[in-house]
Amino acid sequence: MSNLITHSFTDNQALAVALAEQLAARLREGIAERGRALLAVSGGSTPRHLFERLSREALDWSKVQVTLVDERWVPESNERSNAGMLKATLLQHAASAAQFVPLYADAPTPEAGLATVRARMASLALPFDAVVLGMGNDGHTASFFPGGDRLPEALDPNNPVHVLPMRAAGAGEPRITFTLSALLDTRALYLHIEGEAKRELLAHARQGVGEAANYPVRAVLTQQRVPVAVYWCP
Image (tube, rainbow, N blue to C red; front, side, top):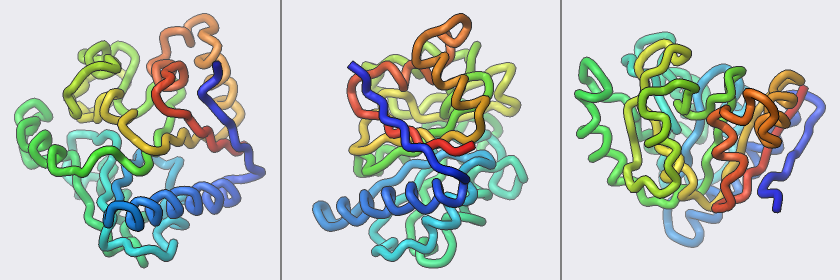
């Protein structure tokens, strides 16, 4: 049985409007039911329009915690920092009142900072209200990179650990990432991709065609724990 529904849009602005409205509704629902909400998002260049739109959504952002699904192990001042990008785009306007919970800690390596990050993440009120994933041209999502040194552990759906370091040839810097089991502990799961090439890659990963059978994103697409809503535009 398919666990995936695709929503297609004419351009990234239309996608950003629709997905921002969906996320805002999820956050409002969490606040109404539990007095708080928890959102995990991806970095990179793709979600910038989405974040800028979401930052203006009317809701009680002071009751929202925001974190990243993964992070490069670089300080926020580094141009490669996902946290820096998030603060410049999402944590603006109405959303500036949200509490940001970073994955990076002031330590030389993710291994050295792991205890600090795990203690910080233990304070999050799981499950997530929404998780937004992206996908790279190599089939990675979060920091689940092909050839990653801790990839099997990160993709284990029964792993009780929430965050892990990750190193891979295609990752650039060392990374830290939520595990798949932690990301699936969510009330709603979204996959945001743009471009024809990624739509084709997604189809191959979903079907397990050729080398795509080993793409890490396939673990997200084939799990049956939580439905995946794909938001795509050319």
